[in-house]
Image (cartoon, rainbow over all chains, first blue to last red; front, top):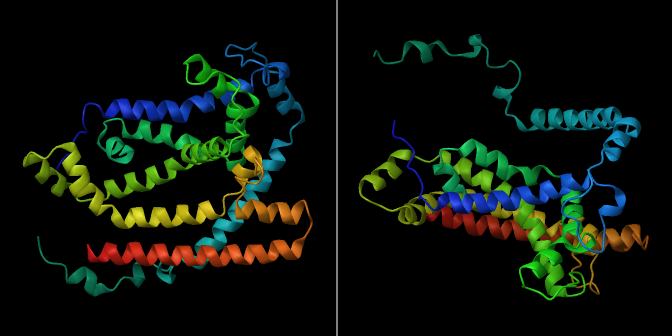
Amino acid sequence: MSKRTEGPRWGWIILTIWGLFALLPIVYFASIALRPRNEIIAPVPIYFPTITTETWAKIWAEWPIAQYFYNSVVAITGSVLICLSSVCPPPMRWPATSSRAMPTSAITSSPPR
Amino acid sequence: LLAALVYRSPWVKGWRILFMLPMLFMPSAAGYLWKLLFNDGRVMADLFTRIGLVDGGVDWMADPLLARFVLVLTDVWQWTPFLFIILVAGLQGQDKEIEEAARLDGASFGKMFWNISLPMLRPIIAIALVLRGIDLLNNMSAVNIITQGAPGGQTETLSYFIYRTAFRSFDHGYASAASVLLLIATVILAQILVRKFFKSGTES
């Protein structure tokens, strides 16, 4: 089996630039979650804010996260089950492809190694 | 290019996780994030002022070109990973013997990319373009959160117009008619893209 060919040496520069483009806004977003309210929208952006966990404490105390999670799980599970059962062809459905479904000719007619 | 580079990188799994992060954001959160960066938090204007690109005080939502740029950037940031992951999967499914043969013949990365990887990826690129084309017609959350059609409706999309008509003007008949029109437009666009790309893909 042949190995994958390595890319050019300058490739990592492009990958790093794109990686920063993908990551830095998320880091900024995470930093927003750790700021006091008056430092989020300020006349001049504050790059090194005061760190506070008040919003996280609020989430922990007030947010019905278990209920939201349960709602999502119910919706997505129902959707996935219906999609799979309507999209999958009959042989792929549960447990139609058991050993008795396999024709014996498929086993006996294989060429000797 | 990103997919081709990542596919050949020894840290393919790490890059894949990093590049997929924006796609995992829900679209409204991504819109909110870029609105904070460009408009409310003024981070971008501040950074551009510091590196001397602008004189400060850029109002991104006042200029149609800048407002559109913000919408495009948001979409690129969030949905490039989708194309990336489809194309990496396509590259990983390709026959590596062909690439190996080209490499032994002395082909450079660029030649292998243009003459081997890209033509073989054509059907996958077609599927990705169809899906993205449909997505773009239905793009609403970024417009709703970032610009709300500003300035003066210059960045309003059909899907945002439908939302505005239905839930702000409460003209449900008008919104329903526009929705049906959008559906027809989406079907026509999808048909054109599928026919064009898949016909040319089978020919090649």
